[in-house]
Length: 281
Length: 194
View: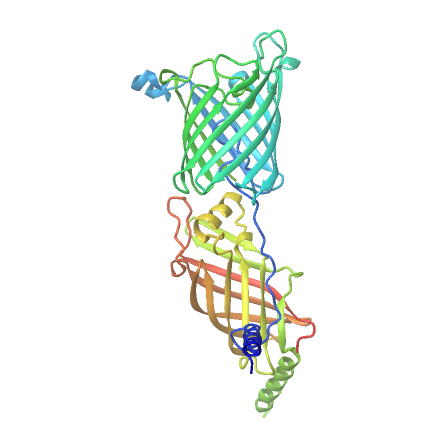
């Protein structure tokens, strides 16, 4: 008997053995391709001011409450590092109409402004060089309390669009880039202004629950207040909550407001504290 | 006298029933299958639910226990607890589904007992595989004849620490150490099988 024939017989015998299960029966059942969940990179749908590319599961609600304390940290213990207030406040309620689309209504006391935002997770690249998500967002803001102007004046309305690119390296370092366009960025100028920003952020996940954030929103073209918005923070993640404690040179909260820049330079003297709490329902 | 007659008649009808049904059965995915993982901790109950169960039951001849095989697996990536973020925490932090996407049970039928209304009470012995850990387990199930197959209803408990699944503490979840697992699904006879 040749070695080749012996090899073929042995191979055939092994295949025969493998075609039987552990109990000696020839089972025809075969496993189907398992389901793959939606690609998720950042844990939260929000960085600090800017959005991440994440949406939510269909049917989820997200309630948000955010504060930016107006007194700077540099006022020290006399103003409880800013916590004495006053504060700018925003409330938001988001709803995931699908796994890819979230609609959010928000309101802040700055200019009594209402914001309607729609966010759509458009591209998921799991097998790219790095896992990548691309989300598009857009919205309108209605400022209902603008000095010397009626509520319904067309100049009180602002519109914006954002494209959000996210990646995550080694499940630790999240990188976000969010170029955006804002129409009517300066409410009080005679002519209508626009603003293009190139917002970006980093989030480092120290553990599954704790992470550090850094965000910079430079104005690329168009109108801007005196300085770019710069923020840093700490995020704590629990069962259905995200808590963010923030330091920033900007005290406004709606998208059309933080995109337009800050009147304070980012420096130790000008840092204001803030927080954001979101609860998934 | 009537009682004496009843036992052979029942045994004969069970034998005929099993002989006509012996063969290979696969999970019927067209049916409304349901697998629930229930955590019944104080103050906070939650369920993880999926319909992604697959697998087979096989036996030969009239004795379900003599040459049988049971295998079922559940796709843990599809577990829905009702909140997307909680699903993600379960997948990534505790079940580690990127490494262990499925939980499975593999064994054989150890005992059968005739229940009421043609149902069979079946005990399967084998190994449960969760989170990369395999542990011996005995699972009791009720088989209710449906068409060419059965509806299978089962309930058993697994202790999370037996499978090296960490109980969340900092995440503010209240999870019971003993997970209550309930299955309600359908199997159908495979065409061409004996």
